[in-house]
Image (cartoon, rainbow, N blue to C red; front, side, top):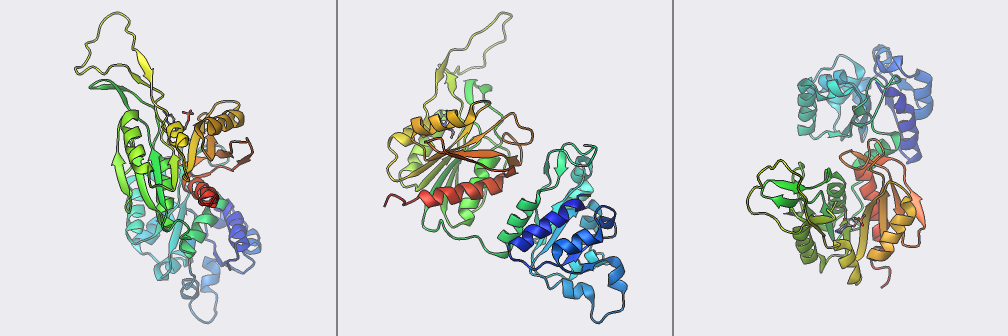
Length: 388
Ligand code: C5P
């Protein structure tokens, strides 16, 4: 149970100007003291005991009038009770009466989270319009027993997600066109073999979705990934770097912002065999030729477009990323480290440093990819039209 993150979350919500009310489930009180919760919320604590204390009006009905309910460190048990519509405790009864949005922030170990019973309950809640944040990969629990998927989102992200639900996203990209590339490329050697990389596409999809939600007209050009096409945007599927180049250049001419998150293979086979190569006992060598650098090509005829790239480095990150920004004529690069646990390739989180061509930079904390996307867009928005 990650109820220990509840006080931090409450503090962030209050800092954001919200009035908070807290319900502690009986099991949460094994992990966090009533005093730390009521102090963080600056209000009385509601518990299963207080529910039955004689007082006018039904407590769960009053609590359910909240504009938003956030279930921090939600257990499989509370999720199941809400999915089933049980009402034998204060938290469940409140959830059964609520009319506003509900944000679930689950915390449990990977085996429990992935169990079909939990997944079914979560799907049921989502089908009723509930929102779910995480869990994300990383270790949790004092003894690290929960390594893998299951770590709860951090208070900062929970507060950001709560604020998004309470206030519709700013429409600061209305009337603007955003082009995003995502995922890996595949460079075929023959019809069944290719050179590629483990890019999941999650970062690019998060940028595309965030831009859409902020009012942009979005084109997403993606390599092969296992994510469903997002709604409300034009999605183009490509495989090779050459196909990516064609699709990106085609959509680039009227774009206001281009974000290149795609992990483009640097090389392709000089020649792709049309038939599958038979296995031989001896060594083989493949002749590779460099792929065109699409971002650099966009930078060479940049015009008024804002260009953002990603740079994955293992060392000397800031200088190398700044050098790339200058060479490719990008407005800024987001530098990330493939070697950091739980970030970059495949993960739900990312820890990036924004690097400008003059090497000035801002290191962001570890955030969900959606939150990285929101910050990227805010930075890019401040540059769109800046030279007008
Ligand atoms: O030089 P490097 O590959 O590290 O640069 C990464 C950035 O450049 C990413 O934004 C990537 O999408 C873009 N890129 C590109 N075309 C390439 C290689 C990288 O647009 N051939």
